[in-house]
Structure formats: C-alpha cells, structure tokens
Amino acid sequence: MTPAIEVRNVRRTFKAGRRSVVAVDGVSFSVPIGGVLGIVGESGCGKSTLARLILGLLPADSGDIIVEGKRLGDMDRKARARLIQPVFQDPFASLNPLVRIRDIVGMPLVAQGTFSRAEITRKVEEMLARVGLTKEMSDRLPAELSGGQRQRVAIARALVLRPRIVVCDEPTSALDVSVQAQILNLLAELRRDLNLTYLFISHNLAVVEHVASEVAVMYLGRLVEREPTETLFAKPEHPYTRALLASVLTPEPGLGVPDVGLGDSLPDPANIPPGCRFHPRCPIAEPRCAIETPPLKRRPAGSVECRLA
Image 1 (cartoon, helix red, strand yellow):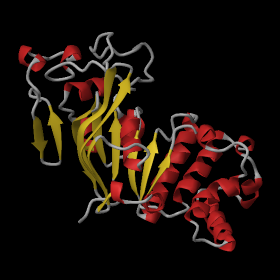
Image 2 (cartoon, one colour; image 1 turned 135 degrees about the vertical axis):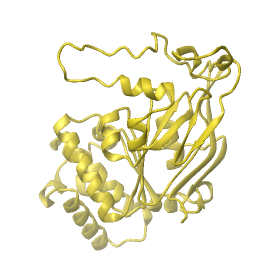
Image 3 (cartoon, one colour; image 1 turned 90 degrees about the horizontal axis):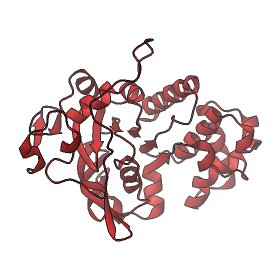
Image 4 (cartoon, helix red, strand yellow; image 1 turned 60 degrees about the horizontal axis):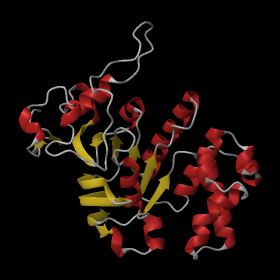
C-alpha cells in the first residue's frame, strides 16, 4: 500500500550570518494511511522545520517528500492544500483577529475558487458542528472565544477541504490541561471518522504516548530512534530517548526535578560535533563515538542510530 507520507533523505540548512544551521539533516521515514507518527525532541531539534517542509511552506535543500504517491514539489498550492493541512500551536496567533469565525473556516474553500457561496456556507456549518461549535459562534471574532474553542476553529479550518493528512505542530501546548484532553479526544475522533493520517509534533511525551501509533525521536536534525509507541516507551534503546523519558516530571511529592545526566550544555545546531552528534552529552559514550558516525540499525518495526544500542 502507498504510504500517506514518505520522506526521503530530506535536508534543510539556514544561513545565520557567516554560519550555517543544519535544521533537518538527511531525515527519512514513512507514515501509513491512517497512522499517527509522533515526533519528539528538545526545542531547536528541527521538529517544526520538518513540519513546514512537509507542508510545502519551506523548500528542502535536497531529498524528496512524497504525499500519497505524488512528489510535493510537483503539486501546485491548491492541490497541496487539498491533500495536507496544518494545525499550529497557538490558535490565537494563527487566526485573523479581525475576521469572523465563519469566514476563517471558509477561507480554504474560497481560495480553491471552485465552490459556490451556498456550498461554502453548508460546508462551514457542517464542519463547525463536527468540531463541537454552534452555528451562533460562527458570527463571533476569535477574541470572543476561549482558547479551546479557538483551537476547534483552527481544526475546522484545517479539515473543511477534507484533506487526507494533518500536520499537528504542538496543537495543545498553549491550552489548559483539561482543555488539552478535549482537543486530543476530538482529534482522535476525527481521525477515525475521516480516515486521517496525522504527523503529531510535540515535546509533551505523555500526549505523544496517548495519540501516536509510532514515535520518532529527533536530535540536532536527525531521527535517532523510531519505534512503535508501546515499544519505545517500554524499552527505549538510544541514550537520548532514555534521557527524554527520564525527564518526565512526576506528581509524586518530594522527588523534585529529575536528573537525566545530560549536563548543562545545550546542543548547538550551528556547531554540530563530529561522529555521533549526541556524544558530548551521552552518559555511555566511548572514545570512538566522537569520531565515527553511528550506523543506522534496523529493527523489526523501527530503527535506532547508535552503535551502543
């Protein structure tokens, strides 16, 4: 079966003065139709850049992105919008504060230029109802809605064209915990009902464990481990994955902030170390890790990029 998304050795570099910042470095993966791939990692590891490459908002320096068998670079903007849509982190920042909700949700339909006014009205009303918003709310401005309601508007706008793939870039991190659960349940329900494929980017491991069927761990532009969700959370192999899981805060009193053994230095994408790029922070690194590029070890349902795994 043709995957919903196939990313082949994609690379993207940004110029920062005289320096080059490698945001995405030779990333490859595929997501089956109806699947949910969670991508996790520290801030600055390249997650959001990867999302924008897949959405076509940024061009890749090299490599290919295939969406349902078609090269992303061969599609025009309208065709790409019919296949793949985003839901971003902050619903207030991604919604025009001066435009009423019905017009925000209907904007993708208007941009296609093939729908009548009556069709747009009907589709907008149907989608608002599907995400749990009343017809009366369609006359409001974004500032007149709660944060959870605004994110429902963003989801309705993303789905009004009935795309096959949705890229969710931290879609719940700006919301209260109780509202997060409602939005996650809504996304799960819509995926089942509409047979959607999700690329779910987050730094919240508990959220990813709840929604994803597979998890990819990103570090300095590389996918260092990828496994089915249950396998990765039960038996992580890469030292960085183990550190991420150990960093999750617990509500148990007296435990304090966990020490994951990564030290105080943060990775610098403009100064990637030789050999294994994680070796300066790795608690089990050997001398050769600073020299030799780690091999990609295939697993029955995933992979890990570490010679000591």
